[in-house]
Length: 129
Image (cartoon, rainbow, N blue to C red; front, side, top):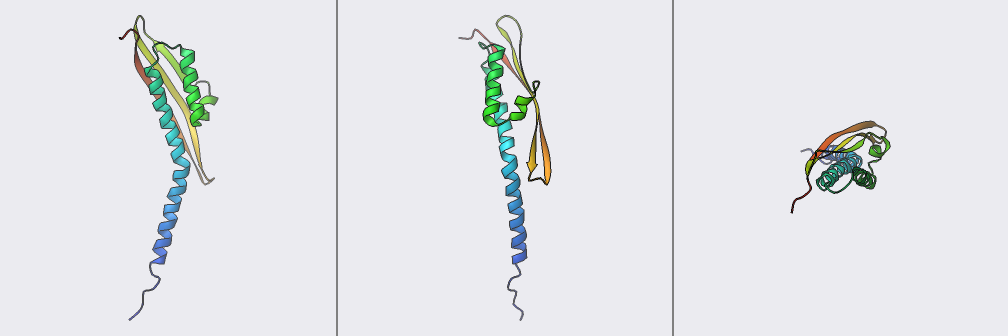
């Protein structure tokens, strides 16, 4: 009878290598995706409360949130963040447009570019009690 001692070591090593690689990829990618998602959620919230704020204040709030989340690419390009209000009278729409790219460098082996092209539009109601 032959002993099968040590036969499972190769599979264990391969599994650990795969798990380690996935962990290293997640370490680089998750903060970028999380920051991007948080910026979109913050823009949604900012657009919802845009009734009594001027456009300059809304732009400043979006840029401060982008800086806080580390979305530097959105702050470099002047057209990356655009805020506009439209409508007349007591109703209208606040639109925030985000267009920028973020590059994730996976330890010099591969570069992935995350493209954000998001348009958030919220209605503005000024005299709601």
